[in-house]
Length: 265
Image (tube, rainbow, N blue to C red; front, side, top):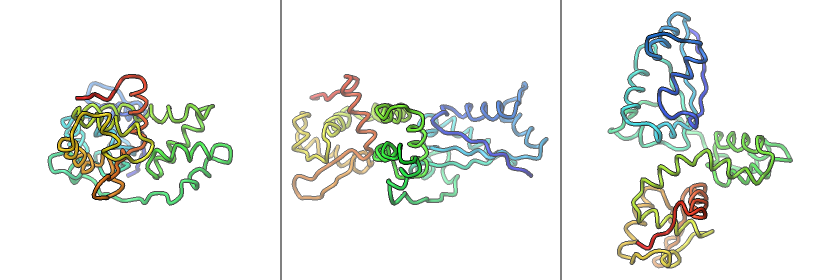
C-alpha cells in the first residue's frame, strides 16, 4: 500500500467539502457518487492511501460547524479512509473536550518553540532577516509561524505591507473571536489595545464606565480563558496585556477605522 500526501493550509479551508474537493481535483476524479466515496474507490483501485497533511488545523475548528466535524470524523473512521496528520499553534479544546466531535481522535506530539527568533530570521537571508524577526514578534515561535513569516517577506516588495498581510491571514478568525465576546469584554480589549505595554485597571478605567465590582470578574474570566495575561501579581495595580499581540494589533486597526470602538456602556 502506497501513501499519497496531499498538503493543505487551513487558511484555505472553510468547510470539510473544501478538503474533499481539493483531493478530487488533484486526483482528477469525477462522477455521480459522493466525493468521499469516489476518493475511497480511487484508493482501493490504485492500492494507495491518501495522507491529508493540514497545517493550522485550529482554523478548521473555528470555521466549521460541529455537524460538519462529526461527518468528517465519521468518514475518517471508515476502514481504509485517508489518514489525517495536522498541526496547530496550540491544543484546541475540540480534541480535549468530551462534547466535541474530535475528542480523543488524535495522538498529540508536542514540538518546542524556537529558542531564538534571530535564528528564524537567518533563514530569510541578510536582506530579509529583520522583516522576519519583526513579524515573529506577533506569532508563536513555531515552525509553521516561521514558514508564514518567510512566505510573506518573500512575496511583499515592501516591509510596510508585511504586517497587513499577516493580519489578512488571521482577520476572519479574530473577527469571529472578538464579536463572539460579550460587549463588556470587547470594551476591555479595546481599552487594553490602546496601551503599548501592560496596563493597570486604573489606566484603562477612563475608557470604561465599569466600577471595580463589575470590571474585576470580567478581567478574571478573560485571564482564565487566556484572552488577556496578568503580567504582575501586586496586591494593588496588577498589570494586564492582551495575550495575542497580533489580536491586539487587529483591534487597534479596527478601532482606527471605526469598525470597533470603546463604548461607555
